Image (cartoon, rainbow, N blue to C red; front, top):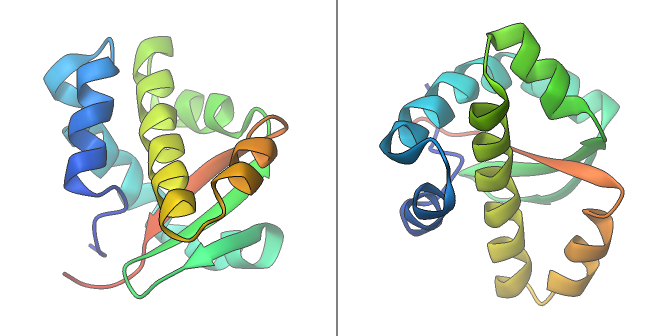
Length: 120
């Protein structure tokens, strides 16, 4: 499996806010396995707004998490929690790179997908 898509502090924050509680890290790992398999497709079809050796951040069409959640058998709360973790990671990246306002605006019309890209 590649690098962790969501940093530890971001995951802790998202877990505290999530209605799925301590299951969120396991859900993120489960979803990461699928996202990692599709990394080439994400690179071809979506805008990569930031990339490091550890992760690539994409903006995808609205409804992407709904479809992926259905495919993976995630409930509404699980899907929402995983999406929120990806959103928090993108916003943290935006704060670090002085692009927070840009990413916040983008999230009004698109959804974030963060994929771990390096073996850890």
